[in-house]
Image (cartoon, rainbow, N blue to C red):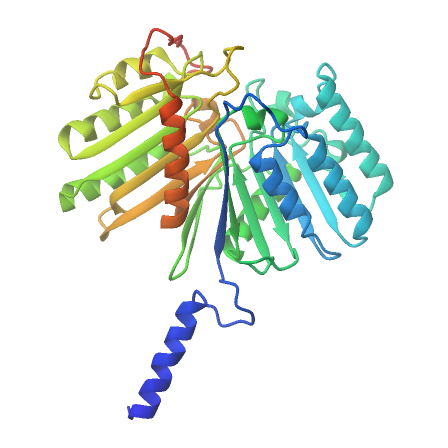
Length: 426
């Protein structure tokens, strides 16, 4: 290769790297992120009742165009400003399309004034924009994932994700494919609880998989074994977990086994940070794994739990084997405190074998979404959890986790766990 051609290739590769490997027009990277968090404990709630996560969603809605598509899967929705902004955008953009799935029990609840008001608002939007707006619960009340009693009174549509297509270009993204994965419901209480939302821009493969999952809920698809989807580029790696599962195995246990394999092969240290709202005895294997890995390897593990009934006594007893100071509790339903733990967050930094027996890489991995560590979340509920391999996202959420940790209480005198789970462990 002559010198001129070699220089041309070097310049071309540099330009591609600067654009995140993208060869299309514009300077926005192919994949970019936004992170929104709430940590609670603020005695002065904002006047509009919206926290950072709701505000992040309002910003995305404000970028709607005449060709925008919005698909929402949400467990509970009472936040008025988000619904009002959506209605405003439907009026402004005649070609915009929006579809919503809400947990059936919450959607039909007439006892809670805010839920009743939200349902009335949605029905008004359907009347005013019949060609643009859908509440799937209204159209197909017998759909499997929308009609709780058809399967089990335990079942919930517990997802909290938002899909946006054809938004106007943003500062760091083109607005073509956007996924917001959250631990928060669309309620005012998200500002009084710990929650996280990661917005992923530009991953078309991941968007398509989430959309297929959303569509399966809408049409009562009976095969719930969505497994996982893996999208990869030179700079970004996403792995989505979809529930419920009808196949054996525990995805979180598999994640920890991959870390254990990396620890055994590399002898490098690792760090795990967890903030988990619900952890029942049917998933106590995860506690056993963490204790064993901490004993046998150089693993720095710290776990933040909720102090009330959602943390099983058996899990707490296992975690007591960790070094002193490894576990803290964040008050949740104490009326004297404004904050509570609603996170479903795990952060892993260490030698990680992404595939069993595969090459070991030092990773900064973020796991977040709607998935609690209980049996219902794994086998009954509609849930999503996602792995993000991005150091910036990881660093931001580690700072958020540390803020929560500093609010935690070491004393176990406050702990009021239970010795049962919501289902049998089959």
